Length: 88
Image (cartoon, rainbow, N blue to C red):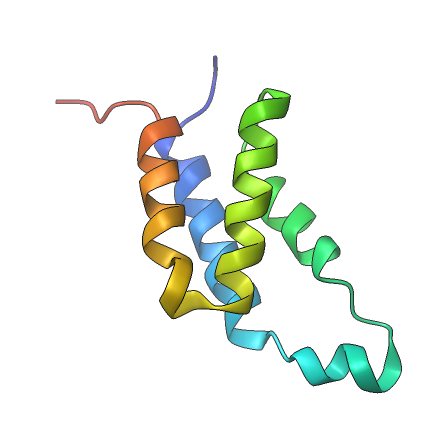
């Protein structure tokens, strides 16, 4: 696999940005916002995810965007599990 720690760092950064700008009332008022679009943007950072990994990350990212305080540690634990080991 060609995944790198940098890709997962990018995924975390994208998720943090999406969480920062997440406003649930925007969906209610104009209907144009779709959280799935933000989640897909976050997932684009990492190559070669198998479907199971992608599903787990998708769920963790969605939860983290909507409730960063409640779910960021779960996302971080998943990223640590999926990312390649550090070099030395």
